[in-house]
Length: 426
Image (cartoon, rainbow, N blue to C red; front, side, top):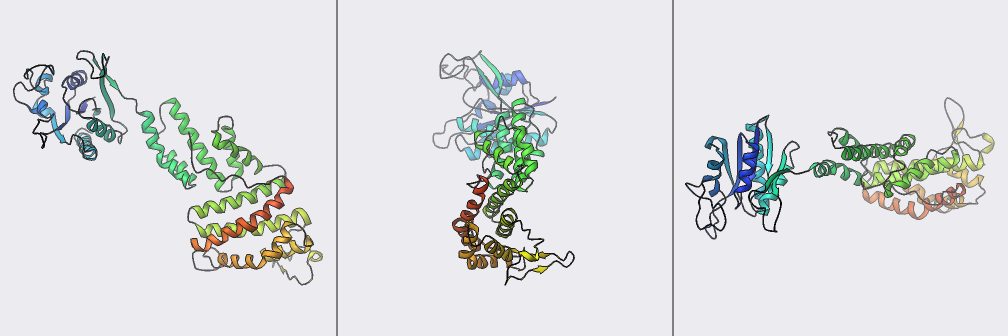
């Protein structure tokens, strides 16, 4: 395979000679500096384009005694390009190196490209590394060797070493999907990971698989597929990072065989789900979930404490003064949200957290539900705004959630579950 070398050139010629001699590239892009405008000191391009003897064999030599690098390595003018860049402007160096890489890819599309960052200023080395890391197939190389001091590797002791960048490239690859977690966009993270190449390194492949599976687990959870989430979390139960370990127990509660406990856990989970939609700025979705939460809470209380099902209310259970509609097909009496809460107040005889809540908060509840009714997702045409959601969120925190926790405490659920994670640690 044809090899193309891109290398930064500094004050020492020997690492460049070593790289060219070892690789025998078909073409070389030399990243060099030009003459310094302030001091008029020659740039590193002199080592490539200088005439006659232009390089000192040793820094201690009084005068140049070696020809330029192409002459020493047998490169013809048709086999190299000199790319002039800044000595310390990292942004400019990065752009120039990136330009050289793109030129190499365009001119030699099937070649192996090696970027050698041994020579040049620290900024030149950094710029080439940064540019090369943007391309998965470019190999990074360093000329190094045994060191007798902290100044430089001694001539004759140099050897090539390819930089291990797999971990760095993997972190860069998954960075957008870590970011997706901060927005609770687990499906986005999973989809993105599935479309990326699986790392060949065993350790990185294991990290990739775990990240993808856990993204899928929380995507399923966020979409109310609690069983699917539990199955995926169970695979990693013994090795889950500490910050994710508690979610396994929460997932088990959402799939508990005790139907009363499971439904209580699902109510609390629905509240967290609504908060996530609000955090994403999806306030119409958030208020729709809140509506369902308030309605479902009444249904759960009636079912578990009064043996009343709002879809099939017995005529004997309808208190005086409460009018319920009949379903047009089944003929059963049915109780919507407000009627269900009236049943809660009546059937619990005004005692308990739920009865106290509806007695004290009925008017506030009606006012907040109006926001949902005007939503596009209900009966209106106006989107729910942040200014609409904020007072509802405050009311939920101060009045509704404490009532709900007082009721779920009867089945040993005394606290809200932890919100789903917004960070991921491999």
